[in-house]
Length: 281
Image (cartoon, rainbow, N blue to C red):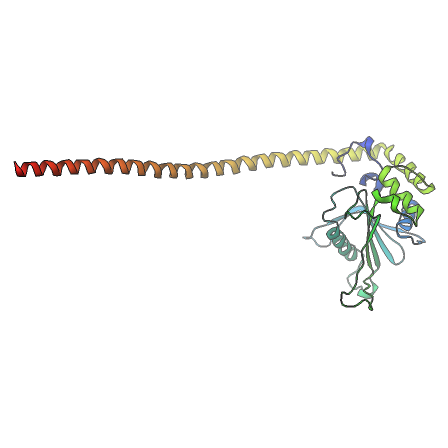
């Protein structure tokens, strides 16, 4: 389900549009990251929020939900309500896009910032029933050497919030994402901010505008699909008709040839018999 497919009055914090608006609050955003990663952050700076990062003019851009940094780390937070099939590949691509976007032409590789790609999933993205999936990079041949490229990818399964036993704040956040129920001081703040976001008429207008655009695009796609289908059907119909015509023609030709052959055979036989009778009479 796309992020603009739900009616405005049904949106919650778990919906991408509202999530991005709530995360515009610097303190709420900073606290969100601190809870997810169990770290402390002094101050964050917004790199962009749901903006398109273009690496090269002919490459595929990537739209990042919440993209911030502190002094030496970069954080990309993605709210995910479905479509988990390519999540690992998306994490890989977002990582590379983030590196390119935050690195200047002459930056030495050793100065690349530590980066975190965080996917907050409403449901279980991998099916193991655990609340947090943390990617680990390692050498297969030895565990004595640490593989540390300063990149991290963490996937959260909000539906398994009740299995979080060592971090009550994380448990409350995941429960709020999954059930839209505030159970802590921080999730109370998220709840209030979500409701305030939904009360903003200009944001509702923007959301409805995007919905209209998507509906127009879907209708154009339907019409293009129908036209393409009709054309393909005509081509296939002609090809099938020609094939059937050839087959029918061959069959009719065989039948006609057999009939004509039999008739010619009878005539030749009759002429032969008549010739023999005349010779002996």
